[in-house]
Length: 271
Image (cartoon, rainbow, N blue to C red):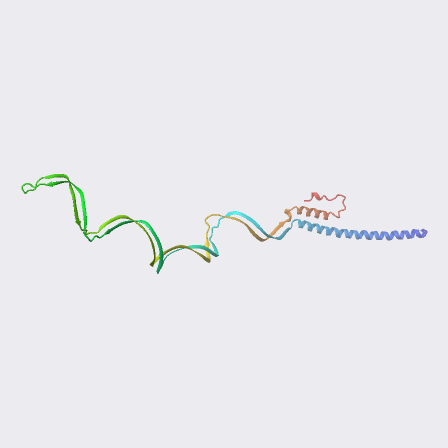
């Protein structure tokens, strides 16, 4: 039968046979590649499903300031280092002894009235003219026959007009006001022996360098910004995030990528 074929028919059959062999080889190769691809896509899908239930473990560094406005109670004693200089005034009270001899010049114009209240000694006899009347009003006892008699009231005025020579054996008090007008220019020696009282405030600077314990009886208002530098470990389960749904959808899509079924994979139904 082949002898009756023409040369073109023979070449056609040969080419078709060769192409058939090539097609069979390509089909076998594609089937092998498809099987390997399905396994790899299945492995990738499984990895995606595992990723959907994994945890993201990382560390977050926080470096910022947090504003704080509150009242806090400090219960313990705080030890505070004090290094400061206090400017204050200290009262100084003393009596300073002064013993000096000095000449003090002075010029004083005196025009005043001097009130005298003193006593004087009169050594000479003094003639005094007496011109007065002595009132008399008393009772006088009259003796009768040498015996004590009754008291008789006597009233009257006795005129006195004579000159008396009087001497004073005692100091006589003098009360008077004497006008004085004079200019005094002189130098007065003054001996100072005294104590001068001093009461002043002395400014001082006190350096203070020590430790002190401080207690707070009530709540202390705080208005500040607190700097915070923290490294916080963070564990985020992907199954509780919205990424888990997309990982499962991607895994389902990868596993059904080589599915020869005409039904598309409903990715929206995968949860």
